[in-house]
Amino acid sequence: MRVTPLGLHCEPGGFFIDPIRPVDRAVVSHGHADHARPGHGAVLATAETLAIMRARMGEGAAGRQQQALAPGQVVTQNGVRVWLRPAGHVLGSAQICVEWRGSRIVVSGDYKRRFDPTCAGFEVEPAPDVFVTEATFALPVFRHPPAEAEIARLLRSVALFPGRTHVIGAYALGKAQRVIALLRAAGWERPIYLHGALLPLCRLYESFGVPLGELRPATVADKAQLVGAIVLAPPSAIADRWARRLQDPVVCLASGWMQVRQRARARGVELPLVISDHADWDELNRTVDEVGAPEVWVTHGRDDALVHAMAQRGLRGRALHLVGLGEEDEGGEADPAGGTGGTAGEPAGSGAASGTAIGAASGAASGTGEGTA
Ligand SMILES: [Zn+2]
Image 1 (cartoon, rainbow, N blue to C red):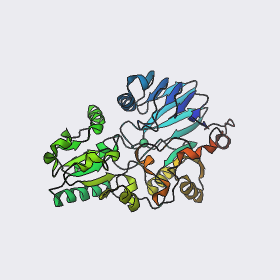
Image 2: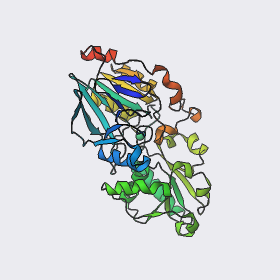
Image 3: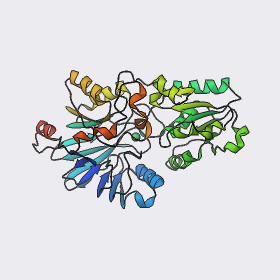
Image 4: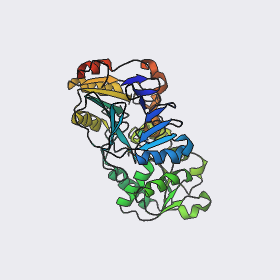
């Protein structure tokens, strides 16, 4: 397995994992736009991810040849065994497990460990030779509160301000559906109103058996109907004219970054909701320990803190500096001026390591001597 400018490349298998430009053969971890790109030849992914790709980029761009793989089902490509395990991130999200000549690597994509009724929970693939992890929230300051407590704060605000409209910024894939499911679990049975950009993926979730209750399009023209209601919109819409035309809106944003007060203030968010689809600091470290790989590669985000923490526990960590990740969902929220001193907002500048074969050390560790994992 090598890092190339296109992404992780499995040379013997002849495929890329989450490549950033069109390739002949891609294995795709999940449907966020920074992982699932248009224009590949063959795409291997879960049925849910393939459906999400078709819905977002059109039938023609979602891979000329699409192969759906159920969790646990194994395919062999040029002697390389590939299978998927749920990652708990969004509907269809999967860790990609690759085995060749007795050594095994697990590429987790994006993941979280909290319960999420809208997707299958993260499953540990035990003791691979290499575990590849994200690091979006890999700083000790990031400890996500229970999502249920954040929803309870939202519902208290709704009860307190019955004359206002609560508009929640939520990413179209994953976060919006999770917030709706959390609201339903908290007993909110009234219709939930959606900005038009969120409706198609909510319908797609429902088609895969995720119940979301009554959803209605939020037409600003009919704003009297939205008084006291909960409206969901893409994060980009909460600050623009669309949201301001609602009745005295309470602007909310559901994101792990809402733990950083400056970010909430900078975006004009009155009610920040710390709800994340990524593992927090404790969950990243716990996951690395539970997986039990002797070597951990960190794809993007705050890799230095995680690599340091792992070294203190005797784990070999390696920052991959993959280009182009972290551009959709919460990964794309980071910005260097955000006040946490992070680097997650600089994917474009991190390509220095591209093209380097970094499998050598792990190949030696796993005894194949061929720079693989
Ligand atoms: Zn993602």
